[in-house]
Length: 192
Ligand SMILES: Cc1cc2nc3c(=O)[nH]c(=O)nc-3n(C[C@H](O)[C@H](O)[C@H](O)COP(=O)(O)O)c2cc1C
Image (cartoon, rainbow, N blue to C red; front, side, top):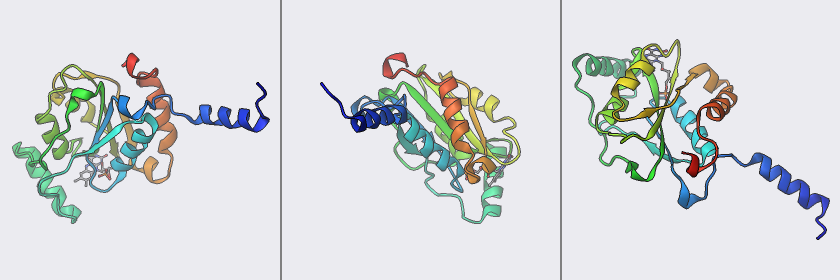
């Protein structure tokens, strides 16, 4: 069978561009869960979704933080100090169909942001592989250690920590891809 040069080149480009993790839609076993206040973690979550062929779930608060950042800061500080975590919008994801769950949020007050803490409080990962990711301005500080302490029954993979600067300057794509290549199972659902 003779294949035209164009056909060969087209299939080569398609193969090179195909994410190594993109499974058929009905076989998806990766979930990206995230909370984002100003959009940076949301942008990372969306990139992970596209790269991995994953499903996406946004953690939403029943009463979202005020848009006034000062007030949001005060409220979240109070929640962290008192342990009175904010209630979430009804309906958490059904984790039973996933083998790998990525959980992301911004670093707030050197730790996990309260809505992500609420999510963790209501979640038992049942031994599934879990990879935390976060965005920050200065440093991730205690985020990873606290996440490990709060992610119940998680088999933890290395985390992805991305600065807000990398996201806004469009420098995050390479860091996300190399983190995924290094840390996530690569051969599809059977390797998860
Ligand atoms: C209330 C509040 C507290 C924050 N605390 C920290 C912090 O302790 N360390 C840090 O590096 N960045 C901190 N930041 C910056 C955020 O982590 C950073 O802007 C992040 O990329 C925001 O993600 P988002 O756009 O998904 O909400 C804080 C931001 C807010 C609003």
